[in-house]
Image (cartoon, rainbow, N blue to C red; front, top):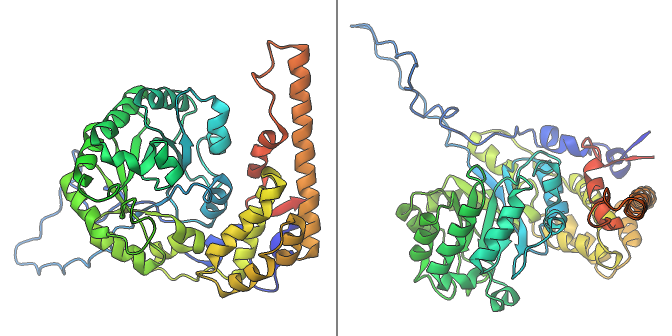
Length: 447
């Protein structure tokens, strides 16, 4: 039988995960507006019927009411150490996100095996989509054009929903090894990287790039943007701060508009968007029709849907704390199945830390569990003992299935090496598919 976590987690009024976006929020997931769907777009196409002229003397038709502004395309940002495939999976199930970009895959001086790509971006094993059907674009980070091209070609064999290139990471460790935002001091190298990757992958796979306004300053902003455009990128995401700015407010969205006016490729706005009001100001100041949400979505998982609703005029109800508990249970089951035990509690505390910005209940929950390092106790404190027991049972079943698959693969390798995979999967990697087996209608576990 199925255990409906929504019923066990909640008092009256809490809802299963699948209903969070469809009923609790009551906001349809609106696809990005295209010229075909935009009522304001020019409809005079070859073969289309001509408009019927107004007969002479007839009263003029009333002017059409302006349509609401086009709904922006909404992307979920790459965030190393935070927004991994488990949190991507949970957040995209809420709704409103059109596409994700993965955390970076570090490329140095060697050709990475396929398992590295699928470990960091397991969605590649599922059509490059999350459980909610949202495309995921893997991101590569490095400074060697030839090596990046070779790895991009191998990654292309997994049929990704595009390949993104990282020129924006501000982390000191990454920058010391000549990766991320430090490359913005070398527009020629930026061009060579994008051009090499574009040449290495099939034309149907888009190559995009993400950058900041610069490394230490903005002096090379347009040089880098033009370099990326000339190299054949399909899209450019700009985080509206320099590396030196880090994550300190404000973000300079008006500088994105400068780039947007200077290049012809699509430009995506990113940086310091925590609320619907922030998002609408960012879109207005940058002039972009696509926005990338990062920490704001982690702090408020309903932000993308709320932004859509504010533009379309739909009514919306913010995610309640009870809905967040369902999301956290879904997320923590994946964490407990796939992450080393010593890191499990920290992953949930990390998310709670961000949720404190939006939910007062998260502050109380965070203070209650901040000294807890055992995952079982963390689950009991947040979700209650019955849920903790059911989660532990399901986790044990998943790990048992993974261990059985590992043993079978090892046996096959010994008895028939020619038919065995090049490397038997570990229990953790073999269980990476199990996160997709959780029913979508709730965190429903087989009892």
